[in-house]
Length: 338
Ligand code: GLV
Image 1: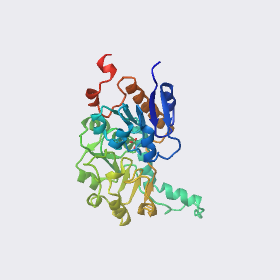
Image 2: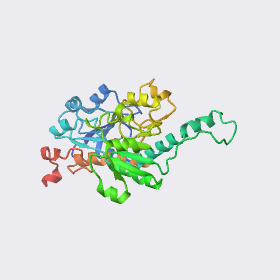
Image 3: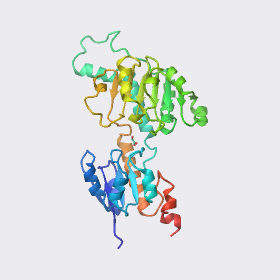
Image 4: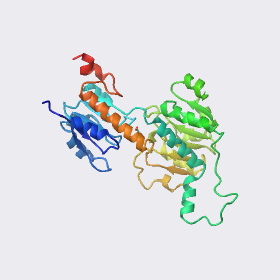
């Protein structure tokens, strides 16, 4: 009988992913809600054939050294993969897989929730009622906010999530303008969005939503100079990556009234280290990186993360591969026809 392959999973996963893995492999699981400490993770991955990791687990050269030559696949339970040294993995013939864009619609929903929450004082309103501060019933000037309907939405980055947000915006009769590395003529025709230069987007938008990936070019793409071009009534929404915004500059812009507010699901450092000035401000809505956090999507992500890993261990191409070049370095059986 063939020896079962050994897999380490850095967190309990919602959905059927873990039982899929356990049927075919020996699974060691890090229990609990917190990520494993670095030392603990390094100890656990030694000699493993596969790892299922999260955004919070740094899989770098050291980790690959410790895992050793049996490591065939790193399957990330995420769309982003900046926590993995992909070049190093490729060099070693290790497949890096991810859960791709299946969370686009769910993240677009949360983006809209943040826009509405910021513009319509949803969080303050809830607190006001709970804390017994609502004394006089309906009032003409109670909690006035801003319209979302028929305003201008500027989307930075027109990939799967950006376009899912644009589609929703059309239901709110919004004018959608965008700036992206790649012009999307197909979506311009299909959804009726308009490509503009960055400055125009900053100057015209009532809501600016970030949906670009994090790379050296997009790091701090929104900083002091960009806030100074925005409308005083503008809201900035970020459900992508915290490092896209210079958070110190954002706090200054919010405090000085340079912009009206911000809705943030992601931060430069996560969890947001306290005490952070943002937590003291009323014109921000803060969420703990829950863009893809629905039962349905997180469950589908577990199936995909498990299937990606099992495929590689069984010599079959994974569903979503980050580093296709690896196939030249260590071809899978199905590629070689064995
Ligand atoms: C979440 O941010 C992800 O990359 O999956």
